[in-house]
Length: 262
Image (cartoon, rainbow, N blue to C red; front, side, top):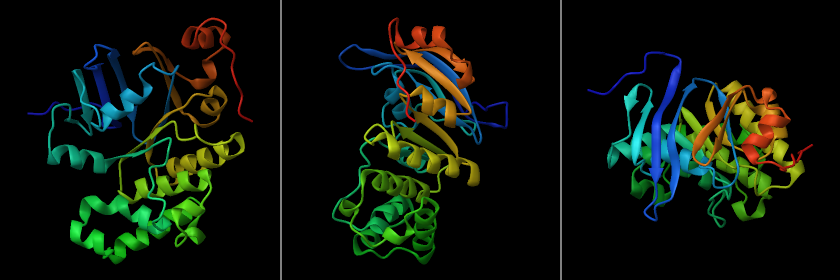
């Protein structure tokens, strides 16, 4: 019988999570935390601290080597095959580099988020349901690019492409949205646009978001809670506005300088 989470507000629980790669690198060393429904949780830390590994373990893009992950009360640590595919349909993900098909239309890219409930033949022939098409257009409008639906993805700017990726993930109808450095490939002016839309998704749809970020100025503006990883371990958990200079040095190392995104 699967273990159950006692707090009904908790949508995701991580317990003593470990990840050791085949080359012997221990990316995660006993990480534990809970995520409440509707949170905008941000994970920070240096490159190599375990942030991306953590997100990829949560939706089983990577297999943990120890510990447990509980999603909506169900232990999903050891699931395989169809169970993993179903989990990924409930835990959406957007990446730093968008992962769009450049020659396809924007709406075609967004509709690929509905693959888990569409047959392969219908998806190849473009025979999407009316409900999925309406949903795709609704989410494109939500992120401010409904007028770009029939452009090729390659015609859009980087910030617009990331917004397409957000709409695609929303079309999965997920309970949780993971965002792995979603603004790392964007210029500073565009960073806030993308983050504003993620905040809109969080607040208007009530969608739980777990996001990896580098810049504390963004973290303080958008996160409801922050977790800092260092060397694969949690070194801070709490209010982003409580990260003072001393905490910053502890998380990023002595002599590190904070870079602000205005």
